[in-house]
Image (cartoon, rainbow, N blue to C red; front, side, top):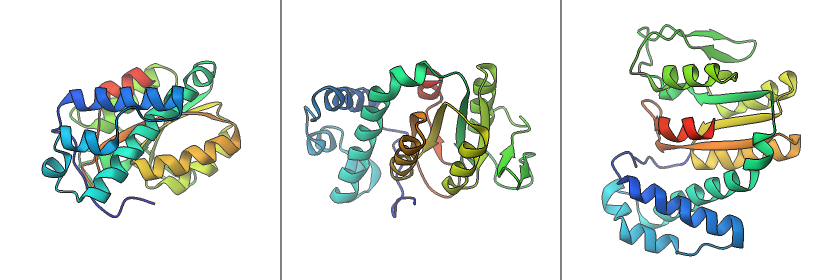
Length: 204
């Protein structure tokens, strides 16, 4: 279930994400956040930069912190896994029309990247993942994930998604005893969504 609002953090200073990581680490270690979400919102002028109201900005930042904290807790378990999958949102493709040459296999269900565009985030992510031995899936929605996980018997999984979908997927992974890591979208929506390739590279 996606957020009911859109956001774009792609122009926020990189230092902001370092602060999110620091708060997440503190939460992972101490089960509490050293700095309040509201302080981060004020410090980085998140409302002004994104146009979000305060409650939506708080929800977004709390989810980002929770994602990083969960990554921290699960990291050691994840690194011990061998058979891994990467799940990507199809809305991060550069083109959402016929210019994208990806083919869709309804039996999986997933798009197969054709590596047709250098500037495509999905192309970059799939190439990185395949070089590291991952199976990569480009999904039309998060509801496809349980079927894939149950039939392919993965030990570890990385998902790229918004915070709300990541939280739901994390609960599912826990039930299936699959070690998970998440890379949050920094711009959401129905098309041209953005994630940080450098963050994904470090997570893989």
